[in-house]
Length: 524
Image (cartoon, rainbow, N blue to C red; front, side):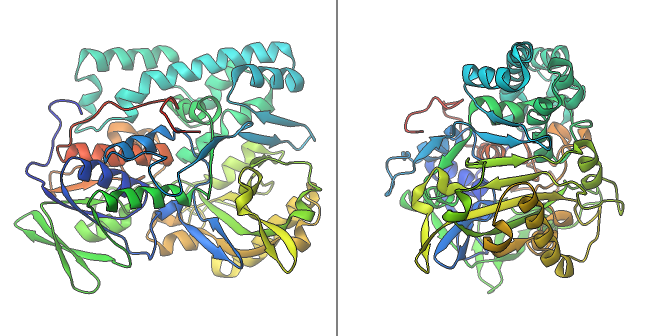
């Protein structure tokens, strides 16, 4: 933690609200530092956005399916002396190769490898040798942007925008980012380095995670593309939900207290300082400090509303279900993650990121298809004598501010429309054989307290990025610290894990040395 940043003194007894990755990360770092920590979770299980749905005979991840930088999980576990192999069963991750399989409207396909030689060979196959050389230059640029911003701007808290120039090192990193063009537009910077429009999509679709179209996203978000395409995407044996389960088990084993089915509805104060979290049953959980990880509407309901309006990211419709493997074996795409791009890419982003009241559903959908059993055969299951696999289909869509649609009426017809699109794109039999057991829509996310019905929190516009994003401490609420996707550093599995550690540091926990970039032990 940078010297001089605001901290909460004398926080021995801490209550953490929310047992998602941010809350569990924070709790592990706190209990590892000897604090008395209680985690309160309103749901009956842990995980938040990395939880699970149960279907007939199977479980399926109900949130994030893409894992990068698993060393940040290892770092949180190490805070209490645990690691991937110290839990039973062990937490096992596998580097996906390729990380993604991309399909395009013209019938071409491209595998996205994190290994530079394999990826250069694949780019050569699809786009030619000259484009492969340009890809390698792009890869170096992505790495430079990531290295320039990770320690100083992603893995960092801010008290003020002046923190960007608070030291010689900060000025040097900021100057380096300016030199790299990181404050230009992501689409433009990538477009200057590679020419093939298909390849440009592969290295800019990550802007959706930041809630902004590539043409508008700051090029600093090339760091997300670097994590996605260079540092590696991992599969977790047992599903992403296993990550939260393991973190929760390690927290409890280290002496922490975890209470599920416990919704915090108000806080007690002595003067301005919070002294207890009050749950829906009336129980008071006393504390010296309170860490809040829910989405900002829930935070503001507890602390009092803020005047500043947050511009939310686009949302998503997600179909969760299962399909017989006899059907899926006929599909051309046989990868854990498939990005099935529509033809009209720019129009898609314009539709789902339009301002208030002008958003539309994608007229030419680009979809993320996740088949976890392809890397974890333990997720295959038998139904009525036939082998089945879990299947998720994610379709980006406008949030409820952008398009206040009646999702109670629309979810069924739109789910059928998406399945029909996939049938026409070559996923033969999916219309008849895909049993959809859960459909998540913006209405789902709104019911869980997420701003504008978006699971991706505030969009990373310039005014909602870095030191301009909601800070993790607020002098109006002494003793309260924020973590999660609504605060720094932002949206995504690695970033919310970082947010938990940053919150612990705000409570006076000293930073330990930690592994980075997939080099830690026990990750594979």
